[in-house]
Image 1: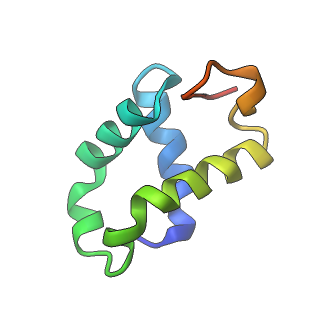
Image 2: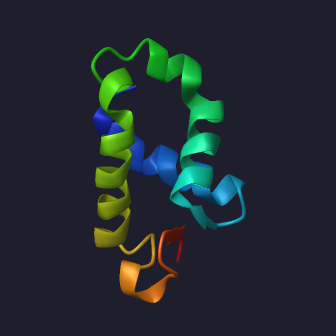
Length: 79
């Protein structure tokens, strides 16, 4: 897994839990789904929780995730 994979995998994870969730819920689901890949991903293993926020920004830019202003505080929601 590389950083550029994260937006698609994040979208997949959010979709798998119903299309929205708190950052903690989403990170738990992401870890449960991709733990093995993260563990062997080199530096990404140590930075993925920062990089997942970057991935959320990329999803917002591509209009696949609602902007922070349109979602509840602390909730990430797909369009």
